[in-house]
Structures are given as C-alpha cells and as structure tokens.
Image (cartoon, helix red, strand yellow):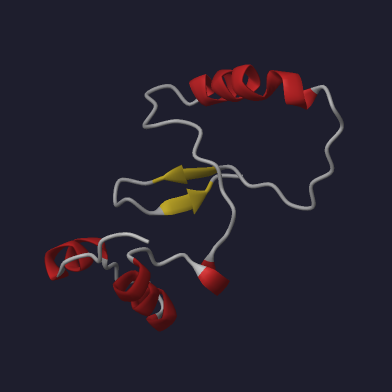
Length: 90
C-alpha cells in the first residue's frame, strides 16, 4: 500500500547479506523483512551516545506495563552497527 520504490532506492536498500527471498521482497514490497522473514521488533530509540540511556528510556516508556507479569519465550537486545545492520547484543 505504498508507492513502489524506484530503481535508485532499491539499489540503495539492497544489501549483500539479503537472501534471494528478501531481495525479492524488497523489490516487490519495498522492504526485505516481510512475510516469512518478518520478526516482530520495537525500535525504542535513535542512535545513542550513551547505551545506558536506552535502559532508562525503556523503563520510562514501559514502566506501567512492567508492573504486570508478562511471559516471554525469547528476548533479544539488538543494536545497529556502522553499516546499518542489526547485531544481537544480548
């Protein structure tokens, strides 16, 4: 439901680590991580100079919800590297 990407934008977003399916998703949907390749994530902040700020931001944002028990099967802390790729930190 968006204007298709032009070739220049596809070329800008195409990364060598994308699978063939992800590259096809990028061309078709404008984003590589859809359908089977989608993984739920929440971006909490933009670039931070001090990583501990993220902890304080999360506590502030989710403080009311954190008082209620929540069961998770998996949780990852992820950061974006200088190449724009997400890496698992913990």
